[in-house]
Amino acid sequence: MSFGGRAAHEHDLLRLARHAGSVCRSQLCPFGPGGKVIVWNRACVVLTGLPATEVLNTKTHWRAFYSSERPSVADLVLNDAVEWAPEYYVAYADSKVAKGALVVEAWCDLPFTGRRVDLTAEAGPIIDPDGNLIGVMESIRDMTAMKDAEAALRALAGLDGLTGLPNRRTFDDVLAKEWGRSSRRGAPLSLLMIDIDHFKRFNDNFGHAGGDKRLEAIAKVIASVVQGADDLPARYGGEEFALILPATDIAGAWDVAENLRKSVEAREIRHPGNTASLFVTASIGVACVVASPGGRADDLIRFADQALYRAKALGRNRTCPSDGDSATCQFRAPCPRDCVSKQPSEPSDTPPMTVIRAV
View (cartoon, rainbow, N blue to C red):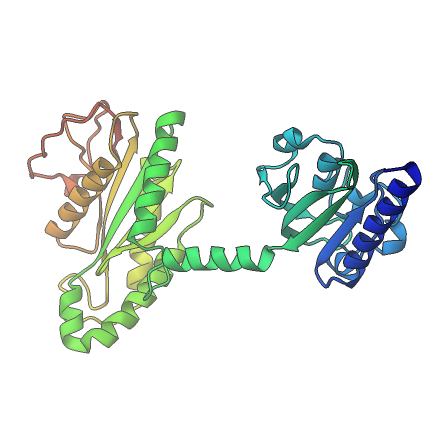
């Protein structure tokens, strides 16, 4: 093809790209051979807040998305540098649209609107009949609403339908994560196991609907004592709740437990069947360990459950610490006098971990 013919064809291709970008209702942005923006359509303006007059025929389109200069996905395609995508994007892949095309996804803090958005951008080369790269067509999709909806669904799936607290599945996932963190950092990890005293009797007196309302009320009390950003209250099952306290030693966990126990009784929810009080009360078991790499998070649950059993055996409406398991104990200290357990420890074949006890 002659130079004149190629130039005319290039002009036609770019004219079509310009037309497509201008009439499309989604964010469509064609670039010319020099990397300059040839269309900044209305959808791009609405998304980014950057007027077309400040972008057209410039290479400063990055200003719409970033606070400092960096290549866009179109720049990578235009400069045949798609292999550099990992330097700038966490999520990226070769696009199936055309050879040399690239699709990326990233969260952006848009400088002109202040919005944080999740964008998917796909850029493909515009090739003339002789195989020359003469431009790039980039499409941008705002995925924020979809991502927010997905997050909401994930959160919903991880919440207990009655109380709104994280459910057992979420509890298990978070405890496993915090166990690993405790093991890596050598930091204490505490767990409270919480049981509503004689709750079956409450249901017998007030019915399951009344019981459900009381569980909702207790869940709010449990959520109210959470202070740390990583603390996790959860409904463990039935009338039993749990509270994960990362980076919290036994003294701190004890304080949280006692605050919680007193707060539950202070609600003054009448409970005629409760032998520990006129009102709804809770028994709480407290356990604290520094996790070992080969240990199991189930051991922490077992320790807290043993402490909870002791609290109930001693009359309920009280907090008791774990006495641990002699097979896994590296540090021993006496428990409060009224919480000494006479129950035999269960055997354990797990590697040693530090079990921290109240004094």
